Image (cartoon, rainbow, N blue to C red; front, side):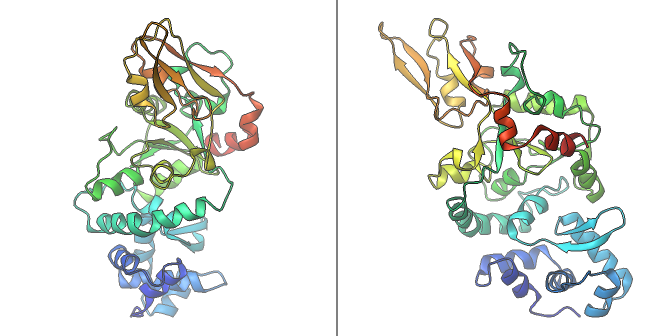
Length: 360
């Protein structure tokens, strides 16, 4: 009973009315009945209930409920009040749908036609459009959280920059990384990690992940194991503003970092630096180049000293204080030095707000 123009309507509502790639994607992502439900929710200004959907679309209540459950798992339907399942909301744009629909641990991106369609649309249309949007804003959407293995000698670590504090949350869930799975679907596997299951969710976000059935609940010990694994591989801990998710990112896959690289956008346009800058001790540095290869921000270069030996040098303007170079240096020649006060973190997000969403 679904209208034949439902897919076109959703594409228009999402800002891609003329995109053949996006229409192909949502036809694979949504059944006709799911698309019809999406249109009703997007177009109605009053609260939409399952009974309203049943009446509008001409489906019995059981089929409507099945569609809503499917859309909920895909991350395309949410509820204003999750517990009572009231206040139906449909994804307002493809960016949100990207982060939610590709994170399902049950889907193999290498064989999924839906994920392949995501890859085609993302690479050819969504990412270029996103790059244009980034250039028009001065909002830093994400903050670097330093490697805890690089802060062992520090005694003034703030809770919201200490990944061990994140792992103390009462509720933790892990999901697959949407960015890596999208790349894998297009035959571009991550250069640093072959493991998708490394996105950590806390508090209510963890509850939401478990309720959708796309991730799994984990202990604090398991969260720290994942964090340690990511640090060993040189991934960067990044916290998005307003989201209780700690991503582990790289410049070859991350929706934010890869766009900065591919479209020549300064990382600082969207990423807030940690309080630290990496420094090198020339007496200990052997010029092995491990640190420069690990640096995702291209802040490290090798220069010859007075005796002609190569030494690593950090450009403090390019350094984001992630600590990947410190943790990977085999000679203990690098360290993180605090260059900003704890108040700098509160300028991006007050500690109390971070505490509510991570530990609440």
